[in-house]
Length: 357
Ligand code: NAP
Ligand code: G4F
Image 1 (cartoon, rainbow, N blue to C red):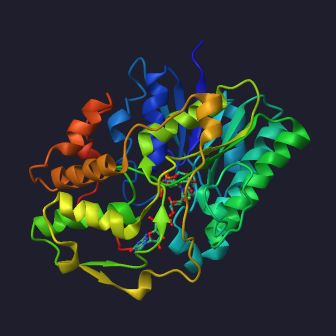
Image 2: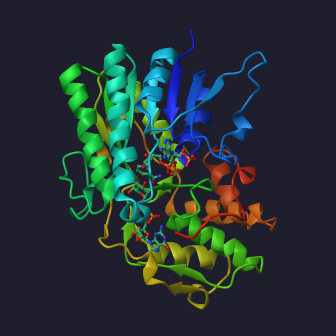
Image 3: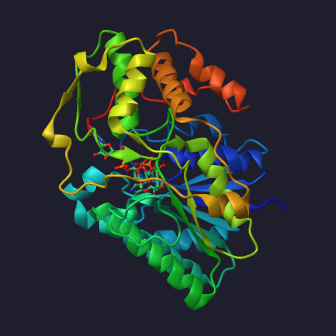
């Protein structure tokens, strides 16, 4: 019998890579999608097989994390072996504009799922997408024992969800894991997160469609990894005998400025001619430095990232160039081939639309 998984946030960056990975492992995959007046499944469209075809293993359902009844019905009807809870209002800057909504979705959404599992009396394993943002200003390196010091409504909501996951593990014996993941990026990263905003702008500048790139705080440092590798860590966490919490990251940090310099230099551009600072993108409170101490996940799950910072930059710049019909510089593709990873997924990324963020 093949295993089944339910993914919330299946249309997001991680949800799409996780779906690919689980299908490749023979899983039947069920995903929660939001009803929208425009198509919002571009990251998973390439995986969809008509339900009338034999062998269809991906099933999508409308729902929303604010709707506990629907979430509960889905879990009861599907009875998945594993639930990967990735759905969230995941943008830190936006969480300052929408603190109440962020709490409802990012914090209470987790409680709704945990309650649904508990009430159904099911044995399914649960993954909570916890975040390095929860560490806030606690000095690096950060590991599973580092105290949290959340610096945004988003981070505060994730801390609540983290503790609810542990509470249901300890109180009701649920197999429930927190993956405390540090930033991970890819060509499918949302267009308003800083890495993608930069690489997408470079392609637009090269294509003559954009003159300047407006950014906020260039000093913040992040531990940036390559997203497809991180979804495998999520899966590994749920394959263990006992549930536990794991920090996942590369152990190396770079400033936003370094990301900008590296990306523009790769494209042969002088970043100082194009980048301007707009205080609109500053946050009321900032998380300054995040660096993972990922020794536990390495030791216990054997997980180790392969893609380096420079390779990540090249993969993302190349992909955004391809998306605009420009000839990619090629080092991104070479890096993926070197690591035996998939080629760039140019069809899946949105070259034009989207607000700045
Ligand atoms: P993402 O691309 O922003 O995807 C978020 C997903 O959540 C999307 O599928 C989105 O649906 C869905 N969603 C948002 N609000 C919803 C609602 N009210 N009801 C149902 N679904 C809703 O995020 P990601 O980068 O893949 O990250 C996945 C998870 O890991 C998130 O929980 C994020 O907070 C967490 N995380 C991410 C990172 C990272 O570096 N990427 C690091 C640590 C933790 P739409 O497509 O309809 O918007
Ligand atoms: O790309 P970011 O928006 O990601 P951030 O805030 O680190 O959050 C991401 O990673 C978390 C894990 O630590 C996830 F939990 C979360 O869901 C999300 O995926 O910003 C990175 C840094 C920040 O310091 C920000 O102030 O870049 C700085 N930055 C500078 N200019 C900017 C900009 N960020 C954005 N989004 N846009 C700018 O123009």
